[in-house]
Each structure stands twice: as C-alpha cells, then as structure tokens.
Amino acid sequence: TGFLATPLLLPTLADAGYVDLAFDLLFQDTPPSWLTMVERGATTVWENWEGIDAEGRAHDSLNHYSKGAVVSFLYTHVAGIRLLDDHPGYRHFRVQPVPGHRLQWVDAYHDSPYGRISSAWSIADDRFELRVVVPPGTSADVVLPDGSHHEQGAGSAVYSCPFRG
Image 1 (cartoon, rainbow, N blue to C red):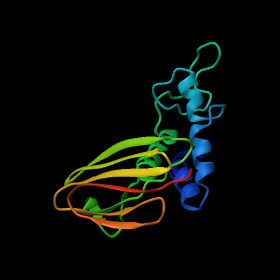
Image 2 (cartoon, rainbow, N blue to C red):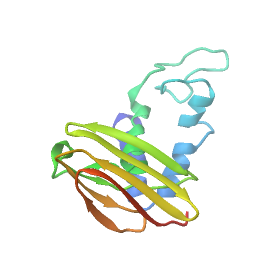
Image 3 (cartoon, one colour):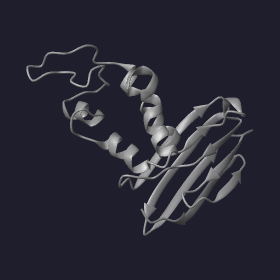
C-alpha cells in the first residue's frame, strides 16, 4: 500500500463496516504481514515485506515508517482515542473503541497538550467495560460498541454495555 495508503488501510476498512477484515489483516501471520516480521525476529517494521532472507541478508531498510503507520489504528480504533477535526489539540475528543479479533482487553493512553487521555477496556461474561480518563479542561464524547453515547468531563469514569463478539 505504500506511504500514502498504509495509514488509511485498517481505519478505512473498519469505518466502512469491515472490522473483521481489518483485524484479520492486522493479525495475519503468514507472508506478507506485520506479524511475519515479528516471527522473523523484527523489533522494528521493515520497508520490504521480505526484510531478511533465509541467509540472514537484509533487503532495504529494517526500520521504516511506511508499514509501521498501522499503529495509528491501534490508538484510534482499537483503543478508540480519536481527535475530532473541529476540536484541534484534543480540547474535546472522542473515545470509541472497536473491539475485535478475540482481543479481551486493551489499555492505552495518549499524552495530549492538556494531559493524559486514557482508554482501557475489557470483555468478560458478555459485558464490555470501558474506563476513560479525561484530562482537566477537556471533555470527551464516549461511544460504546452498543452505540450508546456519553458526554464526559474531566476525570475518570467507567462505562459498560452488553457485548457478544
């Protein structure tokens, strides 16, 4: 997909209703895939899917941004911490996690100009539970997988809803 499309691939699939396909691509462990790199010992993301051949020779850069841009999907969709176009700098933001692919929990944070934003969720006994921390002077629109919306001011809150993955 290259520099321009890789950051958009998984979010676009998820936003278009193909959440399962986005997670299938993220967790694919056969070549070509991000997890193939990990299985071959990578500690960075390679420029070329092949990266290191059977003889241990490197092909192109072994520390490359292009395919690594997929990490934004983990923050914006899996953890759900989303910058809103009409509220620059995270003064007001959305937390809208998209659970999938057998993930049972996520714990992530973003250090915004106003302080730390935190999203931690778990699934147990057909319940989705989300803990959100909103920094002082900001607010969040919290959207749960069941579609319910909650406005949250500064501080910590816990939300839950039924969940059948």
